Image 1: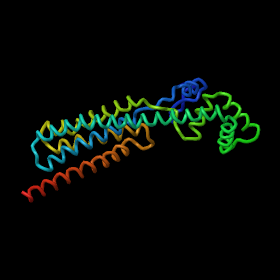
Image 2: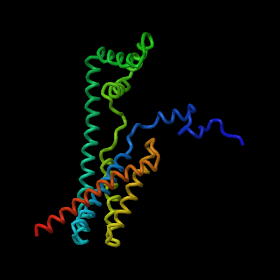
Image 3: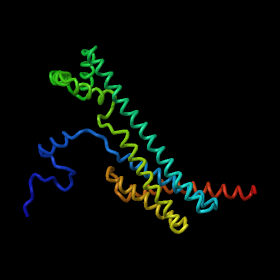
Image 4: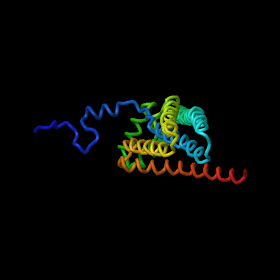
Length: 250
């Protein structure tokens, strides 16, 4: 059976032909929103299950679970999105601020900025005529010069995210994942159903995020399951303890 010599080996994630390398390097350096989905999904599942477990532990009516659960999904989901919007926008604004500083320094003190480039690449092992050629090439293109300084001097990534998309992804994940423990409880008014469904969500989130990790899907799933259920268990214990205190007080 003949194979395509240009096809990547089975153990590699992509091939290394000149054309494929050119395509990969030519893509826009935009950030992805995996972190926002995972962050929102885990938080939505934990907080909603915490309400279910806490209310059940305190032996309150099922209608309380419904009201508090829906209020949590709407209010906390919006708050999570708003918080992520502000945080993401701060990162974008900081990148813009530092880029503006570099443009000003290049305009007013180009020799000093060239020396910064020189020292940055000297630390990478370049020297002599080779180092001077690097300085010459980078400083000949202001955009390249500015991007290089942003990455090398400040450690910033040029892959910026849209604050609006970050907020939408966080809120959507919060709401969708947060519905699971609430709906599963209301189906049969059984905490066991909610526990099982919540555990599946945690495991699913962990298994999915292994796509961007070196950990195996099962290990990543179990890790997220352990973290999430630990937080949920604490909520149930607190609710049960408060219910006991209230009974004693009354």
